[in-house]
Each structure stands twice: as C-alpha cells, then as structure tokens.
Length: 217
Image (cartoon, rainbow, N blue to C red; front, side, top):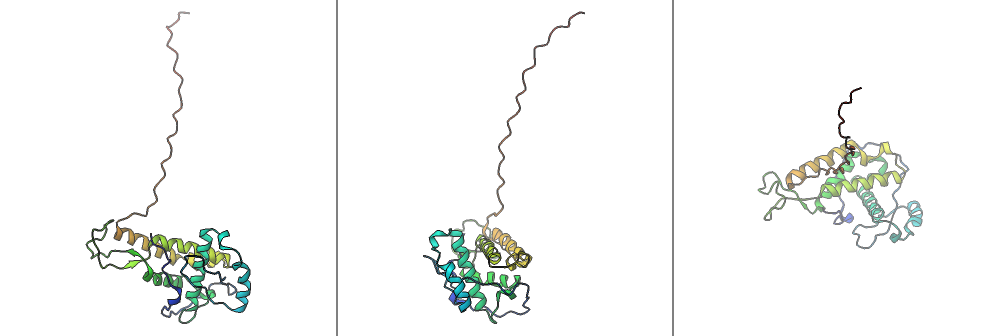
C-alpha cells in the first residue's frame, strides 16, 4: 500500500469549480503545525489571528503525539493549503463533498500503485511478470485512511458531524468504487477475513447406568 508522502503541497494548482455549496459553519479554523522529521508537506501560511492561536498547539513536542495524530495534523494542513490554492480560493465553510472528491482525484498524480487497465495483459494479475504503461494511482487503503483522518480533524476543529464533507455519501461511494476497481485490476481482495470462532466445548454427558433386569413386584 502506498502512502501520500509524495504529495507536494507547493505544487497545488487545481482547476476551478463552480456550484459551491455553503454547508458548513464559517468559524472553522485550520491549525498550523510545523513539519516533523521525514514529512514532505509544507507549513500553511495563516492570518495573524490563526497564527496566534496555533502557537500554543505547535509548542507541543511532536514526540508526545502518536504517529496517527502527527499524520492527521499534516493531512489537515495539506487540505487547508489545497483550499487556499484553489482557483477561485475556497474557504472551508464552503467546502462540500464534491470538493473532497476533486482533492482525492488530484492526489492520484502522486500515487505509487500500479492500476492496470482492462486492455492491459496484466489486468487482474497479482504479480505481473513485467512492466506496463498503466498509470500509477493512490491505493484505496491510503485514500480510505486519509479520509478517516480528515473526517476526525474536521470535527476536532469545530465542524458538526452532520455537515462533515469527508463523510458525505458521494465520498463513501467514490471510495467503494476505487476499492472495487483496484481489486479487479490488481487481482487482490479487500474483503475482511472473518474470524474463526473457537469451537465450543461439547457438554460432557455422564454415562448412563447399566440397565437393571425387570424386578417382579
């Protein structure tokens, strides 16, 4: 499974979109966190008000945070910069599930997972014997984990669960479509393995007493 670490936020320049849907509270904020070692994302420039509020959070040593929390902060900052570089610029309060899908499709150019097309002779092969010109994409597992972190970060920054763009139905359907198409193209299965339940011990039946002869009364 590939990661999203190859994503360079300084190169964001997606095409403009229309039909913005103001579904979210306007008081959401994006917190700036400095890069940790090995991270490739850049710090997002913020206004003076946001920067003052972020200074206290960024003073916390990254070593005290879990790997999940550090990655969640980097993902949140990355999405925030994507919105700022959007044409036209897009605020988080006007972000919808359609913009999340646009973000996910944009990330595909940084993917490292070979996804074979139906015309490729290696379509459906788990271990193809040779190279092919099929495109590289973000793996479904990476996108699914990314959306999970962004969905949690949205609510941590004041967003309401019912207005969470990362939990929109369109996003869930898109992830399911990516999972199914990549499973067919790569010859793998994403179905969760069912846990085998331990066999229940059979009740011990005490042996029956030997039969007695009929006694004449």
